[in-house]
Structures are given as structure tokens and as C-alpha cells.
Length: 495
Image 1 (cartoon, rainbow, N blue to C red):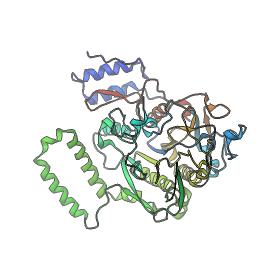
Image 2: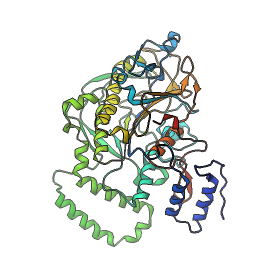
Image 3: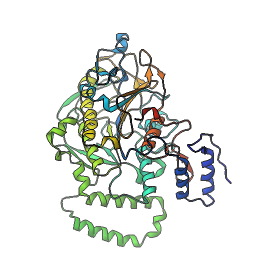
Image 4: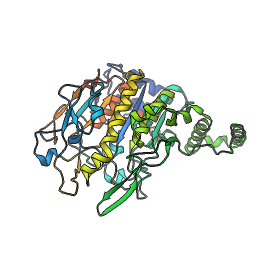
């Protein structure tokens, strides 16, 4: 039997990762992929809240908000630490939030705050926070096609769901809003992260395109630049909506003509079936199937058309790009999508979104906190009212936190800080009205229950019914661990 060296990380039934790597090696001698997946399923004993969440909404605040101006305020710290914002009480005794989060203050009894996230990579990165990669650097973060990358969380979920289902779904199951990641910022380099890596491009998220205009402009600063930009994250017009990227049907292309084109395509495919053995051909075939499905699917276009909601519901989420994206995410979940990712991405300038090195307080008070407050509170409240929260896992997180000490720049600033920061979770088996973990007097270091972003991912997989210590085949068919050794499920977050 082939043995591949690995650690002695034990799974729920006492099997080790080394044991499963032996099984994977045996696969080279005849063990099939379904058998490998069955062995992984047997390796999980289920456990507390395993599989409670039917679906998941990920809210990723790119650039990283300050823990000190959101959910881990330190009002007794010196002014150069605590800054100018004041805490207000929430409806959970002892849990204060920032004064610019009044809507969230009234619904913190529906969420759990995790205050003890930390790691050793204070660089921007969806690729670090949302994949199983064990090591990352700036070059990897700016290279989406680097072969060392691991698959995005949503891609892994879709991979396991397809193995269980036995093929492509009739409805998109891994959708991301509001537009393809890192495409609305200056510069030609796109950031890594929300991609399927070695799983292949058919497991990439299906991206939407934002259809609308900003209702407000703001001045954005990047080093010596100060540019006025109309930013839909600050506010968007009421006629805004979303559609699947590159899948809008031309006006002259009716469903009848589409079906005739599909018939012709099928005839042409007869002469090149042998090419389907090639990975690129398989990917193209998968994309074609999904594209036809999306083009012909009224349910997808209707779910993404937030204009169908009442003004009252749209106002609940806030008339901003992030707010309306959260509303579209809820509608997609209702329509049958398993996982929706909503990114608060850079817009206009690089170093934008929550990356507040400059003009920290003007941006937090005008561009960021009010819009986030309505969007998050609106989403969780709306899901709860509709009876969907207990089966929908909502996770709001970022790649790191921000420095405890304010920088002496115009409008103040906070730089990157990964030694301590916060996340907020709700629904899908997560406890209500709970705080997990703690930091020191200046939110600099974790003092209780330190956890990594990989632990959060393990917890998300577990709640969605996927064994977090499982394996996936890479491009050569060799089994690769989903998460690094030492990763654990955070049962302390559970209801």
C-alpha cells in the first residue's frame, strides 16, 4: 500500500489523516472517488448541529473593519486607542456596539459575536480567510492563478454537493454578488480568493452583475490621490437590480431560438465526443449546461430582481449596493440556492472598501457603518421573520482587524492587524445573543479562546453537513486536505 507522510490529526471516529491519505494512495490502485467520499462520510460521526444549516450566506467585508469601532469597543482605553466613537448598549446585556450601528443594537439577541479571531498574516486576502491554504504572501494574494491556492469555501461546498447529487444542478448553487471580485477598482491586477483553484473552473462561483447607478458621490483618498467617485456602496438608485454575469439574453434571442441553437450544438458535439476526456472540454461542457440553464431560468432572473420587493423591505436593507446585494442573497436562498457570497469590494480606487488607512473616521461614519448597519440587521431580521434563520447560516467576517493605535494622518487611520479581530454569525445552528472570546484592554491580543479563520471555515462546513477534515482530489487525482492540521469545529458557537 502507498503511504503518504502526513500528521496524526484524528477524525471523529479515530481515523487519522494519514490513514485517509493511505486510502487515497490506494485509490491509485483501484479505489474510486465515490469510495473515497464514502470513507470520508464514515469518518464523520455527525455530532452537535452537524448539517443543521440547509444553506449559507457569506458576507465578506473586504479591507477589514476595525474591531474597536464595531463589536469590541474599549471605552476605557486611551483616546489614541479608543478614538472618538462611543459605545451604545444592545438588547443583549453587557454587549455594547458602536453608536453608528443602532439597527444592529436592536437585534444582537439574534447573533453570536466572535471576538477572538487571530492569525499571522496581516495582508488582504479572501484567499487566506476563505480557503484552506496554510501559508500565503502578498504575491499569492495578487495572483489568482497561483497553483498553491486552495479552493474557495463556496467551491468546496458545491464540489461535495455535486458528488452527492451526481451532477450539475438545475439551479445555481454557488452564487456571488454584486460583481466579479476585484473588477471595479483601479489597476489591472485582480486579487485572489473566490475561485475553485485545482477543482476546476466549473466550480467557480457564478457572479452577478450590478445593474444600476450610484445615487451619491464621495471623495476617496489613496496616498496623494483625492478623487470624487460615484459609489453605489454609499447609495444606489431605486431602479437598481442584478443579473447573472454574461448570461443576459439578447432581446432578439427567444427561448425557441435558444433551443434550436442548443439542438445544433448537440449535433456538433457528436463529432467531438472524444474531446470530452480533456479537462478543458469538460469545463466548457459544464459551463454550457449552466449557461443554458440560467438563460432559460425565469426563477433566477426574478430572484435577482430586487425591484420586485416592496419599498418597505428594500428600505429595511438600505438603498445601498451592499444592502440590496444582501436582499438579493435572501431571494436567491428562497429560490433554492445553497450558498450565496456577498462581497463589500473595492470600488473606484484600490485600497478602498474597509481598508481605512486614511480618512478612517469620515469613511466609517459616512460610507461604511450606516450602510452595513442596515444591511446586516435587515438581512438577519428578515430571515428570522420569514422562518428561514434557523436553517440559513449567516457569517460576516473579513481577512483581519485593524491596529489598536490610530495613525496620525488626516481623518485618522488604522492599519492592518491580524492578532485580534471580530466576526459575527447567526442562524443555522449558531447561538443567539452570545459573545465568544475576549481581547485585552486595547483589543490588541486575544486573552480568551483564540481561534483562526480556518476554525470558522471548519464550523461552517460542519453546520452545512460536510466533514471539515475531508479530502478533495487535485488536478492529478491526489487527495488534498480541505483544511490545515489543527483546525477545529467551534462548538462553543452553537445554540
